[in-house]
Length: 294
Image (cartoon, rainbow, N blue to C red):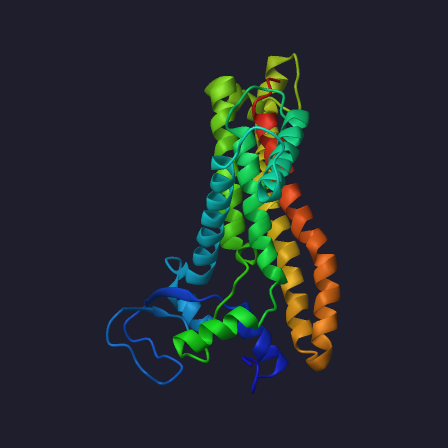
């Protein structure tokens, strides 16, 4: 087991570090005493090396699993679509149609403007986030231990839940944020978008007062606008990250870990689905607001 010989604190810290690929600077002294003669691209061995690598480093495990799960979603749904025939669907096709109808109903209830992008976007967000969150239900030591055996490195860091990495959740939310800005400008025009940020919520008929309150309006509306991607990303990250921590603590319970893991997994399924649903619904709501004229 990967936790053999580790204290509780070391075990948790080891499991919370991603497989980070980055460039260490020349002259950096590594944990084994090696001093690098040149700037070197390598895998980080500890948090200090992750910090030394700086901004341009990559969480290989997060990227790999998120891309794999996204490709799995595309493959399965494309395959189900190709096999669609007239009549009542069965098996996996029936499940896919249920998911699509569920998404379509929620989009129609919230989004009242014609836009062919919103429903496919909502479907992608929901299914992709569900798949990423579901990786949290896999016992915490199984896939990391397999990666260590395959690589031959018993100290290899390997995390398998992409949504516990804020890089992924912020990446998703920033994409939604970019769409909010795009449609706000497209629907209202650049002047309408600027007016929305500077003439609300305090609006006066007196031009002098209106100009006077522009900085206050911009501050309030700016915070409201920036809070959308921040709340989207942190809500998803925080809930799944907390669930991952509980699974790690359960893994330290010896023989009791199997029943405890099962009990927490049953409850955590609700969190997995709920957080994906919340992320999808907020995406629809924010884009609906971007299409509204005030």
